[in-house]
Amino acid sequence: MGAEPAPPSRVDPVALGRLLRPRSVAVVGASDVTTSVGGAPLVLLERFGFAGEVYPVSPSRDAINGRACLHSIDELPHGVDAAILAIPRAAVPGALEALSRRGVGGAVVFSSGYAETGPEGAADQRALAAFARERGLALAGPNCLGLVNFVERVPLTFGDASPNRRTRPRGLAILAQSGRDDPRAHLRRDGQGRHGHLRRVHRQRGGDRDRGLSRRLRRRRRHGSGGDARRADSPTRGVPRGGAAGPRARGRGPRRAPRAR
Image (tube, rainbow, N blue to C red; front, side):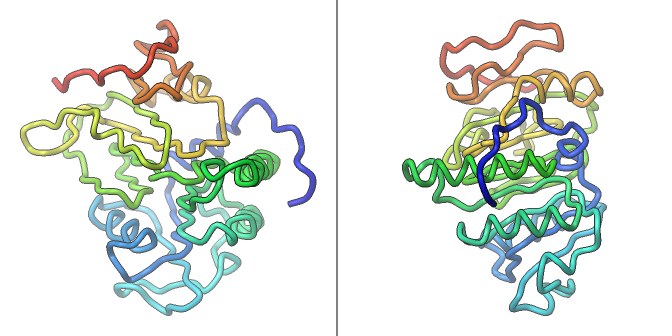
C-alpha cells in the first residue's frame, strides 16, 4: 500500500451511508459452514430478509445454498455498496485494493491480528485506515463483530442476531469498542426476546481505525437516521448523547443503556 499518508479528519459521508444502509452486499471468504465467520453472514442476511443483492465470493466454491459464488473480488459488479471480509489477515490489504477498484462503498473487516497484537499489528492497522480514507472507503474494524442495521434489515456480522419486528421509526444507536465485547450484554431484551430499543444501527468498532464517531452520529441524526446514542464502554469517548444538540458524553466510564419502553 506504499507510504502511509496523514489520514484526513473526516469519513466520506456518502461511503458511510452506503456501508450503513447498503442495497448490495458482498461476502468475501463466503463459506457453506453456517457457524463460521464466512457462513454466518449469509445465514443472517437470509434470516433478516435483506432485500438487496448478495454476492458470495469464494475461490473454492461454485455455489453456497443455491446461491452462485464469484471466485474473486474482481468479478463483482461495479458499485456494490458494502463488503464483509471474512478472510485471513494477510489477504486484507489486497482485498481492500480490489474492493476500491470495483467501487465498493465500505467494508467490514472481521480479521484479527492488528493493534491488539502489538506495535507491528498497530502499524498495519494504521496503514489499512490510511488506505481506506485515501480511496474513500468506509471501514469498520478490523477485529470486529460487524454492524447491524435493524431498520433496513442489514446484518453485516457473524454474531448472534435476530430481526427486530417493531416498526418504531426512531431509536437508539450503539457504537461499542473491541472485537471481544458484544454490546447486547448491556441491553435489556423485551418480552419476545428481541432487542426492543435497538431500532437502527448496532455497530462494533473493533480496532476502528476509521475514527470520528461524534461526527458520524451527528451526521446521521441530521439526516433523520437516529434518535439517541449511548456508548457501551469507556474507550468510545466523545460520542454525543441525548440528541443532536445534547451534551457530549464525558470520559466517566460505561453508561447503562436506557431501559426498553
